[in-house]
Image (cartoon, rainbow, N blue to C red; front, side, top):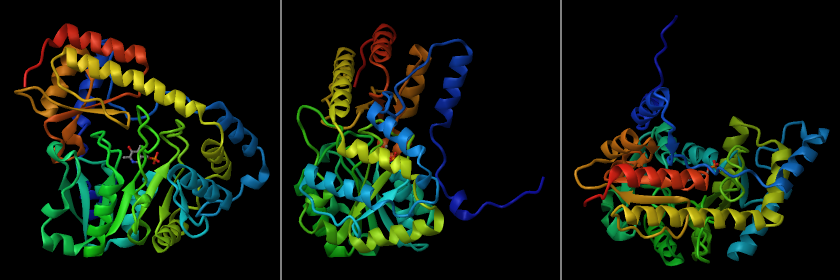
Length: 393
Ligand SMILES: *Cc1c(COP(=O)(O)O)cnc(C)c1O
């Protein structure tokens, strides 16, 4: 066996922080414990039938068996533009301001390759979706973390970013509704973001993966609703979360035409776009009946209530999240994120996600995901009530 030295960009990727808890889960399962995971942020409900039917139909058409366009079919990009018009009153040119992605994660990772040279600075939220920093590290860039603090509504405070860092920064990632905190923002925050970006010449990448998963009539805005947003950045989005299509791998980036073009050029050198039958299916998702989405939201809403009420009975003071399928909760007194997650799995066989897995500022929190069957969620809280007792802060 030859030994090969890995490239620095791979060696520099952060350690996988969930390895220890995964080992514990495996041990518990071996002992015969019926482990309930509240850790996974992946819809448990199936993709709606009309979307699956479209895939089946288009899979049989030989025209779809050849290489697709790396930027996506125009009809798919038109469907995305129509969705933006209808949902956010945002105008997009489907030819120059929309690019199809193999899941938004693909574009989030690749945008760093488009704009960051080794040593360049990128601002990333902490806690945050790990791909923002991961993609930047693969591009050899330096990450500066913007701390998302509870007292600031889990929003970055741009005035706290040192001027020399802001001046050096080339790009930034933000994400609202937010994974993992469930925090939401209004268009005013996006306008502040545009102003900050213009002042320091920073490319803004907003991740709007959860725009459609919201409760009590709340409608999360698009970054592109902010005046001037298209001049400073792009927004990522995806059918993954609204239509239970995480396995299908299709999303988009929209906004600043030169940035959209750069992503397309990079993609033409890396992949050749997504299977057209999947693009057709995603069009059906975006333009077809939305009752399955409404049904999803109703189910997450019920689960959200189970979680919030369950936590309150255990002694927590939690507000229900307005959007996303996550509940972000402080750990009790005397625990770290990791020690509490380990304690809960030991005592109850229930898996929660330790907050430090999303960055240093996630320390002291854990995340509960609403993407498990309602009965299992109820069972998890029955066990916690039985075995944990009242928590203290
Ligand atoms: C789930 C998720 C995505 C979406 O990923 P896809 O690649 O489109 O499936 C993007 N950002 C965040 C924060 C997510 O949680």
